[in-house]
Image 1 (tube, helix red, strand yellow):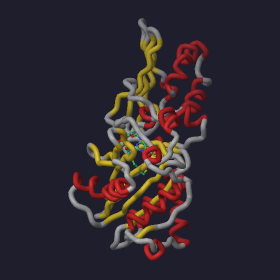
Image 2: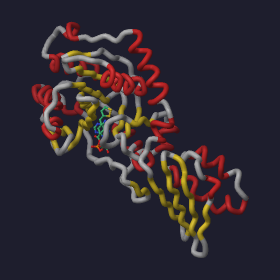
Image 3: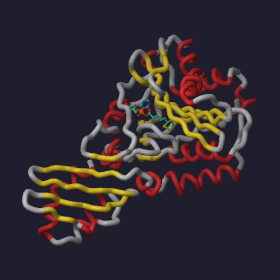
Image 4: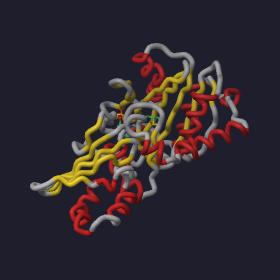
Length: 318
Ligand SMILES: Nc1ncnc2c1ncn2[C@@H]1O[C@H](COP(=O)(O)OC(=O)CCCC[C@@H]2CCSS2)[C@@H](O)[C@H]1O
């Protein structure tokens, strides 16, 4: 097994690096990446951001929302959350996969006296509380398995950033499996910091004290390509919000209901229904479903019509 050392906390870069290693680096042996992101929200490939994330809270606190290439639900990352990725040409059938790829984490924690175990389809738990979520994706006979380890994450922020399940959004999108979560550090006999934990896990996984002999390094051209992927994909609105499954959002205030349908992140229809009529606002067609763009459009329409829509602005993007 090989590893690529990465001390960077830039989530856009780190997701680009992972995708690059999966798609462009050829290695017979498995590659293990251990990485830590600055505060960020990572949504699954087939999710609707507005159904999962408190977008306004994230904006206010400069927490980026980023779509990843694997399926599954939404997770919160910060400097207390350790991610692991394995890029492998050697994998068995799908169900066994999740167990076998996460077994080293379970074994490592167990030998530290933590009662960790595999649970459900793809979680790791201590007791009944989840500390690790996992997802996978295949690419040309290679598999990316990745997972989180909540080590000393701010669980208060986690709960503010992730939304409870909402009935306001209709879509075929993937829903997150909301769970009760716990930090590994609180279960250790002697506490340690995440860097020490990361190095110890790396040595355990590689089964050696000499981790250097397992290093794979990136060349100048690799770094350039990763940087380009970061800029063009992971930092783009088109990927993070535009590559969303279509969805319909409905909000009701008193006897007025507003229904907006969104495709590729853009508004297709926006209809206000009152007890006496239905108003179709074609002015919004094609504009981004996001608060700023919506407010700009709102300012261009007739004052009396604007007045009927205004009460919905806050709740629509909450
Ligand atoms: N960081 C983290 N770790 C574990 N569990 C979390 C985390 N953040 C949130 N959650 C809980 O999991 C559910 C979502 O569970 P769900 O099963 O729906 O989704 C996942 O687990 C996806 C894991 C993706 C892992 C990737 C690895 C590298 S980049 S992201 C959420 O509602 C919370 O209750």
